[in-house]
Image 1 (tube, helix red, strand yellow):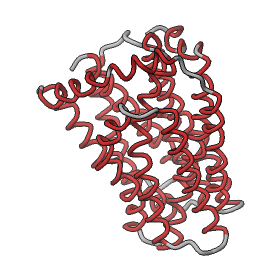
Image 2 (cartoon, rainbow, N blue to C red):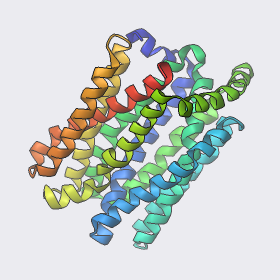
Image 3 (tube, rainbow, N blue to C red):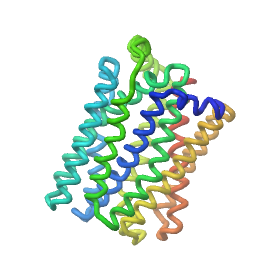
Length: 338
Protein backbone atom coordinates (compact mmCIF):
# COMPACT_ATOMS: atom_id res chain seq x y z
CA UNK A 1 0.00 0.00 0.00
CA UNK A 2 1.54 3.34 -1.08
CA UNK A 3 1.30 6.45 1.09
CA UNK A 4 -1.47 7.77 -1.17
CA UNK A 5 -3.42 4.52 -0.93
CA UNK A 6 -2.91 4.45 2.85
CA UNK A 7 -5.01 7.62 3.20
CA UNK A 8 -7.45 6.99 0.34
CA UNK A 9 -10.38 6.25 2.68
CA UNK A 10 -10.24 9.89 3.85
CA UNK A 11 -11.60 10.91 0.43
CA UNK A 12 -14.91 9.39 1.52
CA UNK A 13 -17.07 11.90 3.42
CA UNK A 14 -18.77 9.30 5.61
CA UNK A 15 -15.48 7.76 6.68
CA UNK A 16 -13.95 11.16 7.49
CA UNK A 17 -16.88 12.00 9.75
CA UNK A 18 -16.72 8.63 11.48
CA UNK A 19 -12.95 8.49 12.04
CA UNK A 20 -12.81 12.01 13.53
CA UNK A 21 -15.54 11.18 16.02
CA UNK A 22 -13.93 7.82 16.71
CA UNK A 23 -10.56 9.43 17.46
CA UNK A 24 -12.10 11.87 19.95
CA UNK A 25 -13.98 9.04 21.63
CA UNK A 26 -10.91 6.79 21.76
CA UNK A 27 -8.94 9.52 23.52
CA UNK A 28 -11.71 9.61 26.12
CA UNK A 29 -11.74 5.82 26.38
CA UNK A 30 -8.00 5.73 27.09
CA UNK A 31 -8.49 8.42 29.72
CA UNK A 32 -11.08 6.23 31.41
CA UNK A 33 -8.90 3.11 31.16
CA UNK A 34 -6.01 4.85 32.93
CA UNK A 35 -8.27 6.47 35.54
CA UNK A 36 -10.10 3.21 36.27
CA UNK A 37 -6.88 1.34 36.99
CA UNK A 38 -5.63 4.12 39.25
CA UNK A 39 -8.98 4.38 41.05
CA UNK A 40 -9.01 0.62 41.70
CA UNK A 41 -5.52 0.90 43.20
CA UNK A 42 -6.60 3.77 45.46
CA UNK A 43 -9.74 1.91 46.57
CA UNK A 44 -8.12 -1.46 47.31
CA UNK A 45 -4.32 -1.06 47.45
CA UNK A 46 -4.25 -4.55 45.89
CA UNK A 47 -2.48 -5.62 42.69
CA UNK A 48 -4.87 -8.57 42.37
CA UNK A 49 -7.96 -6.37 42.50
CA UNK A 50 -6.45 -3.89 40.04
CA UNK A 51 -5.88 -6.80 37.65
CA UNK A 52 -9.47 -7.96 38.15
CA UNK A 53 -10.72 -4.70 36.61
CA UNK A 54 -9.09 -5.68 33.32
CA UNK A 55 -10.34 -9.26 33.75
CA UNK A 56 -13.96 -8.14 34.11
CA UNK A 57 -13.57 -5.78 31.13
CA UNK A 58 -12.09 -8.48 28.91
CA UNK A 59 -14.19 -11.50 29.94
CA UNK A 60 -17.37 -10.55 28.00
CA UNK A 61 -15.28 -9.72 24.93
CA UNK A 62 -13.68 -13.17 25.08
CA UNK A 63 -17.03 -14.93 25.56
CA UNK A 64 -19.35 -12.98 23.26
CA UNK A 65 -17.33 -11.41 20.41
CA UNK A 66 -18.20 -14.26 18.03
CA UNK A 67 -21.87 -13.67 18.83
CA UNK A 68 -21.22 -10.00 18.17
CA UNK A 69 -19.86 -10.92 14.76
CA UNK A 70 -23.07 -12.82 13.98
CA UNK A 71 -25.14 -9.83 15.07
CA UNK A 72 -22.97 -7.52 12.93
CA UNK A 73 -24.09 -9.39 9.84
CA UNK A 74 -27.79 -9.09 10.66
CA UNK A 75 -28.46 -5.58 11.95
CA UNK A 76 -28.44 -2.02 10.69
CA UNK A 77 -24.93 -1.15 11.85
CA UNK A 78 -25.47 2.60 12.15
CA UNK A 79 -28.50 2.16 14.41
CA UNK A 80 -26.75 -0.52 16.46
CA UNK A 81 -23.73 1.74 16.97
CA UNK A 82 -25.98 4.62 18.04
CA UNK A 83 -27.42 2.39 20.77
CA UNK A 84 -24.08 0.91 21.83
CA UNK A 85 -22.24 4.24 21.91
CA UNK A 86 -25.09 5.67 23.99
CA UNK A 87 -24.65 2.79 26.45
CA UNK A 88 -20.93 3.56 26.66
CA UNK A 89 -21.85 7.16 27.47
CA UNK A 90 -24.19 5.99 30.25
CA UNK A 91 -21.47 3.73 31.69
CA UNK A 92 -18.88 6.54 31.76
CA UNK A 93 -21.42 9.00 33.18
CA UNK A 94 -22.32 6.51 35.91
CA UNK A 95 -18.67 6.06 36.85
CA UNK A 96 -18.14 9.81 36.89
CA UNK A 97 -21.16 10.63 39.06
CA UNK A 98 -20.54 7.78 41.52
CA UNK A 99 -16.92 8.90 41.93
CA UNK A 100 -17.78 12.59 42.13
CA UNK A 101 -20.42 12.00 44.81
CA UNK A 102 -18.16 9.70 46.83
CA UNK A 103 -20.30 6.58 46.38
CA UNK A 104 -17.86 4.59 44.24
CA UNK A 105 -16.77 1.17 45.53
CA UNK A 106 -14.66 -1.57 44.00
CA UNK A 107 -17.86 -3.57 43.43
CA UNK A 108 -19.24 -0.72 41.33
CA UNK A 109 -15.95 -0.60 39.41
CA UNK A 110 -16.13 -4.34 38.68
CA UNK A 111 -19.80 -4.17 37.70
CA UNK A 112 -19.38 -1.23 35.34
CA UNK A 113 -16.20 -2.75 33.86
CA UNK A 114 -18.20 -5.92 33.15
CA UNK A 115 -21.00 -3.85 31.61
CA UNK A 116 -18.52 -1.97 29.41
CA UNK A 117 -16.94 -5.24 28.31
CA UNK A 118 -20.33 -6.64 27.33
CA UNK A 119 -21.02 -3.56 25.20
CA UNK A 120 -17.57 -3.89 23.59
CA UNK A 121 -18.21 -7.53 22.67
CA UNK A 122 -20.90 -6.34 20.24
CA UNK A 123 -19.61 -2.85 19.42
CA UNK A 124 -16.16 -3.94 18.20
CA UNK A 125 -17.28 -6.39 15.46
CA UNK A 126 -20.14 -4.13 14.39
CA UNK A 127 -17.79 -1.13 14.12
CA UNK A 128 -15.22 -3.16 12.17
CA UNK A 129 -17.91 -4.34 9.75
CA UNK A 130 -19.22 -0.78 9.42
CA UNK A 131 -15.86 0.39 8.08
CA UNK A 132 -16.52 -1.50 4.85
CA UNK A 133 -19.88 0.20 4.38
CA UNK A 134 -18.38 3.63 5.06
CA UNK A 135 -15.27 3.45 2.89
CA UNK A 136 -16.36 0.98 0.21
CA UNK A 137 -14.51 -2.15 -0.86
CA UNK A 138 -11.90 -0.22 -2.86
CA UNK A 139 -10.79 1.74 0.23
CA UNK A 140 -11.27 -1.01 2.84
CA UNK A 141 -7.57 -1.68 3.55
CA UNK A 142 -6.98 2.06 3.93
CA UNK A 143 -9.95 2.30 6.31
CA UNK A 144 -8.60 -0.56 8.44
CA UNK A 145 -5.11 0.99 8.55
CA UNK A 146 -6.47 4.43 9.48
CA UNK A 147 -8.75 2.95 12.12
CA UNK A 148 -5.75 1.14 13.64
CA UNK A 149 -3.71 4.36 13.51
CA UNK A 150 -6.50 6.30 15.24
CA UNK A 151 -6.60 3.67 17.99
CA UNK A 152 -2.85 3.82 18.56
CA UNK A 153 -2.43 7.61 18.26
CA UNK A 154 -5.27 8.12 20.75
CA UNK A 155 -3.27 5.85 23.04
CA UNK A 156 -0.68 8.66 23.18
CA UNK A 157 -2.97 11.59 23.94
CA UNK A 158 -5.61 9.93 26.14
CA UNK A 159 -3.30 8.59 28.88
CA UNK A 160 -1.27 11.82 28.95
CA UNK A 161 -4.46 13.85 29.48
CA UNK A 162 -5.65 11.31 32.06
CA UNK A 163 -2.42 11.60 34.04
CA UNK A 164 -2.76 15.38 34.15
CA UNK A 165 -6.45 15.27 35.12
CA UNK A 166 -5.90 12.56 37.73
CA UNK A 167 -3.22 14.65 39.39
CA UNK A 168 -5.26 17.88 39.32
CA UNK A 169 -8.99 17.03 39.29
CA UNK A 170 -9.29 13.33 40.14
CA UNK A 171 -10.69 10.24 38.44
CA UNK A 172 -14.24 11.61 38.22
CA UNK A 173 -13.08 14.28 35.76
CA UNK A 174 -11.59 11.61 33.47
CA UNK A 175 -14.83 9.61 33.47
CA UNK A 176 -16.98 12.67 32.75
CA UNK A 177 -14.70 13.81 29.91
CA UNK A 178 -14.97 10.30 28.44
CA UNK A 179 -18.76 10.49 28.66
CA UNK A 180 -18.69 13.79 26.76
CA UNK A 181 -16.33 12.33 24.13
CA UNK A 182 -18.99 9.84 23.01
CA UNK A 183 -21.05 12.79 21.77
CA UNK A 184 -18.50 13.18 18.95
CA UNK A 185 -19.28 9.67 17.69
CA UNK A 186 -23.04 10.05 18.15
CA UNK A 187 -23.13 13.37 16.27
CA UNK A 188 -21.02 11.83 13.49
CA UNK A 189 -23.31 8.81 13.19
CA UNK A 190 -26.33 11.11 12.85
CA UNK A 191 -24.56 12.97 10.00
CA UNK A 192 -23.61 9.83 8.04
CA UNK A 193 -25.73 8.94 5.01
CA UNK A 194 -25.07 5.61 3.30
CA UNK A 195 -25.87 4.40 -0.21
CA UNK A 196 -28.38 1.48 0.12
CA UNK A 197 -26.46 -0.41 -2.59
CA UNK A 198 -23.32 -0.41 -0.44
CA UNK A 199 -25.29 -1.72 2.54
CA UNK A 200 -26.76 -4.51 0.42
CA UNK A 201 -23.29 -5.53 -0.77
CA UNK A 202 -22.10 -5.77 2.84
CA UNK A 203 -25.04 -8.01 3.74
CA UNK A 204 -24.30 -10.20 0.73
CA UNK A 205 -20.82 -10.90 2.13
CA UNK A 206 -22.26 -12.53 5.28
CA UNK A 207 -21.66 -16.07 4.05
CA UNK A 208 -18.04 -15.19 3.28
CA UNK A 209 -17.42 -14.48 6.96
CA UNK A 210 -18.62 -17.97 7.91
CA UNK A 211 -16.40 -19.49 5.22
CA UNK A 212 -13.46 -17.49 6.56
CA UNK A 213 -14.01 -18.81 10.08
CA UNK A 214 -14.05 -22.38 8.79
CA UNK A 215 -10.82 -21.70 6.88
CA UNK A 216 -9.05 -20.18 9.89
CA UNK A 217 -9.79 -23.06 12.23
CA UNK A 218 -9.48 -25.78 9.60
CA UNK A 219 -5.93 -25.10 8.35
CA UNK A 220 -2.63 -25.40 10.24
CA UNK A 221 -0.99 -22.03 9.47
CA UNK A 222 -3.94 -19.74 10.28
CA UNK A 223 -4.80 -21.84 13.33
CA UNK A 224 -1.19 -21.43 14.52
CA UNK A 225 -1.38 -17.66 14.08
CA UNK A 226 -4.63 -17.49 16.04
CA UNK A 227 -3.18 -19.59 18.88
CA UNK A 228 -0.03 -17.45 18.99
CA UNK A 229 -2.15 -14.31 19.12
CA UNK A 230 -4.25 -15.73 21.95
CA UNK A 231 -1.11 -16.68 23.89
CA UNK A 232 0.38 -13.21 23.36
CA UNK A 233 -2.84 -11.53 24.50
CA UNK A 234 -3.33 -13.66 27.63
CA UNK A 235 0.26 -14.01 28.85
CA UNK A 236 2.03 -11.04 27.25
CA UNK A 237 0.04 -7.85 26.89
CA UNK A 238 -1.76 -8.54 30.17
CA UNK A 239 1.13 -6.89 32.04
CA UNK A 240 -0.60 -3.58 31.26
CA UNK A 241 -3.32 -4.53 33.77
CA UNK A 242 -0.97 -4.08 36.74
CA UNK A 243 0.85 -1.04 35.36
CA UNK A 244 -0.72 1.26 38.01
CA UNK A 245 0.88 -0.87 40.75
CA UNK A 246 4.23 -0.90 38.92
CA UNK A 247 4.14 2.88 38.48
CA UNK A 248 3.28 3.67 42.10
CA UNK A 249 5.04 0.96 44.11
CA UNK A 250 8.09 0.12 41.97
CA UNK A 251 8.87 3.36 40.14
CA UNK A 252 7.58 5.52 43.01
CA UNK A 253 5.69 7.83 40.64
CA UNK A 254 2.17 9.21 40.83
CA UNK A 255 -0.84 9.35 38.53
CA UNK A 256 0.90 11.67 36.06
CA UNK A 257 3.81 9.22 35.79
CA UNK A 258 1.42 6.33 35.24
CA UNK A 259 -0.24 8.27 32.43
CA UNK A 260 3.16 9.03 30.91
CA UNK A 261 4.14 5.34 30.94
CA UNK A 262 0.91 4.41 29.16
CA UNK A 263 1.49 7.23 26.65
CA UNK A 264 5.02 5.95 25.97
CA UNK A 265 3.52 2.55 25.13
CA UNK A 266 1.09 4.40 22.83
CA UNK A 267 3.89 6.32 21.08
CA UNK A 268 5.59 3.04 20.21
CA UNK A 269 2.31 1.46 19.09
CA UNK A 270 1.44 4.49 16.93
CA UNK A 271 4.89 4.42 15.32
CA UNK A 272 4.43 0.75 14.49
CA UNK A 273 0.95 1.24 13.01
CA UNK A 274 1.94 4.25 10.91
CA UNK A 275 5.17 2.58 9.78
CA UNK A 276 3.39 -0.55 8.57
CA UNK A 277 0.76 1.53 6.77
CA UNK A 278 3.42 3.65 5.04
CA UNK A 279 5.67 0.74 4.02
CA UNK A 280 2.81 -1.43 2.80
CA UNK A 281 4.18 -4.58 1.14
CA UNK A 282 7.78 -3.34 0.78
CA UNK A 283 9.18 -5.68 3.46
CA UNK A 284 9.04 -9.35 4.48
CA UNK A 285 6.57 -9.82 7.30
CA UNK A 286 7.92 -12.99 8.91
CA UNK A 287 11.33 -11.63 10.07
CA UNK A 288 9.71 -8.44 11.37
CA UNK A 289 7.09 -10.48 13.24
CA UNK A 290 9.84 -12.60 14.81
CA UNK A 291 11.80 -9.48 15.80
CA UNK A 292 8.64 -7.95 17.28
CA UNK A 293 8.05 -11.05 19.41
CA UNK A 294 11.63 -11.01 20.70
CA UNK A 295 11.47 -7.24 21.28
CA UNK A 296 8.26 -7.49 23.26
CA UNK A 297 9.48 -10.39 25.40
CA UNK A 298 12.74 -8.56 26.10
CA UNK A 299 10.98 -5.33 27.04
CA UNK A 300 8.67 -7.10 29.52
CA UNK A 301 11.69 -8.81 31.14
CA UNK A 302 13.44 -5.43 31.37
CA UNK A 303 10.41 -3.88 33.05
CA UNK A 304 10.75 -6.59 35.69
CA UNK A 305 14.21 -5.32 36.68
CA UNK A 306 14.03 -1.58 35.94
CA UNK A 307 13.44 0.59 39.01
CA UNK A 308 13.89 4.07 37.50
CA UNK A 309 11.09 5.97 35.75
CA UNK A 310 13.49 7.47 33.17
CA UNK A 311 14.62 3.99 32.11
CA UNK A 312 11.11 2.52 32.11
CA UNK A 313 9.85 5.09 29.57
CA UNK A 314 11.96 3.92 26.57
CA UNK A 315 11.30 0.28 27.52
CA UNK A 316 7.56 0.98 27.41
CA UNK A 317 8.02 2.60 23.99
CA UNK A 318 9.75 -0.55 22.68
CA UNK A 319 7.00 -2.71 24.21
CA UNK A 320 4.34 -0.63 22.45
CA UNK A 321 6.15 -0.76 19.11
CA UNK A 322 6.62 -4.53 19.36
CA UNK A 323 3.03 -5.16 20.47
CA UNK A 324 1.61 -3.11 17.59
CA UNK A 325 3.81 -4.81 15.00
CA UNK A 326 2.82 -8.20 16.38
CA UNK A 327 -0.91 -7.42 16.25
CA UNK A 328 -0.93 -5.71 12.84
CA UNK A 329 1.31 -8.20 11.04
CA UNK A 330 -0.49 -11.23 12.46
CA UNK A 331 -3.83 -9.77 11.38
CA UNK A 332 -2.46 -8.94 7.92
CA UNK A 333 -1.01 -12.43 7.46
CA UNK A 334 -4.31 -14.01 8.49
CA UNK A 335 -6.14 -11.96 5.86
CA UNK A 336 -3.66 -12.23 2.99
CA UNK A 337 -1.62 -15.43 3.38
CA UNK A 338 -3.70 -17.85 5.45
